[in-house]
Length: 300
Image (tube, rainbow, N blue to C red):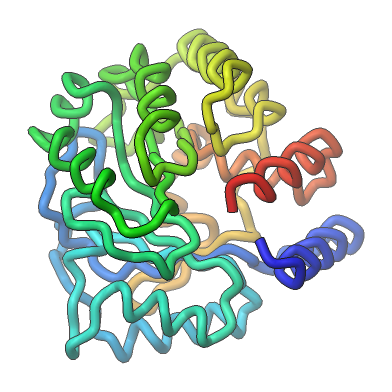
C-alpha cells in the first residue's frame, strides 16, 4: 500500500471513530447479475441477467467517489462476463484508478483467464477441496486452479464462503492458497442464509470450530486475510450491522452495506467477516485496529 493511501485511510479512521461519522469508504459496483455458474449457495445470480451499460457504471463510479469511497470493488454475477461499448472489466479498473480510487478490487469465480494486473486484489471464489467445491459450483475446480497458475500477476486472494457442504475443507483451501503461484492470501466468510439457502447456514458451535481451524492455519503460516480478533463476534453474530462505511450500487440503487439489507432479519444472521471487522474497527476496537494495520499492510 502506498504511504499516501495509508495516510488517507488513517485520517478517515480517526475522524470516523472520534466524531462518530458514518460516511462510506468502501463501495461496490455491480456490473451485471449474469453468471455462467449456478452455485448452490448463491441467491443473487441471473435474476435479470442484465449487463449494465458502461455509461451508467461510469456514472455510478463517480457517484461513489463523490460520496467519499476510496476502496472500490467490481462485482457480479460474474464480472469477466461484462462487456459494453467495447469495454471490459479491465477498462473499468484502469478508469477507477484514474478517477482517484486508492484501492480497486475485482470479484470473480475464476473460470475465465486472469489477465488483470491493474487490480490491487482479485477476490476469486474457491469453495473447498475439489470434491466440495465442485458440489457447490459445478465441475470447475481444475479449470480455476489452471487459470490461477497462468495469471499475469500475483494479486489473487481466494474467497471462500463456509457452509454445511464445505465446512471441513478450510485447511485444504488455506494450504492451496499457501502453495499456489499468484495467490497472495485467502479470505473467509460464513454463509449468510438468504431465504432459499437457509439449510447451508452454520450453527454457533460449527462457527466456533471453523474459527479454531482458521486460527490454527494462521499460526502455521497460512496467508489468511481476516482478523482473528473479530472471530468471537462472528461466532456469536454479535457485531453492529449494517456497516455504514460500506455501500453497494446496482442499476442506480445505493444500498448500505450490501444487497441483503433489504431482506428482513438477514442482517442479524450476517456471515460477512469484513462487516464484523469494519464495524468493530470504526467503533474504536483497539485489537481490531492493531490487527488490521498489520494484515492490510501485509496483503495489500
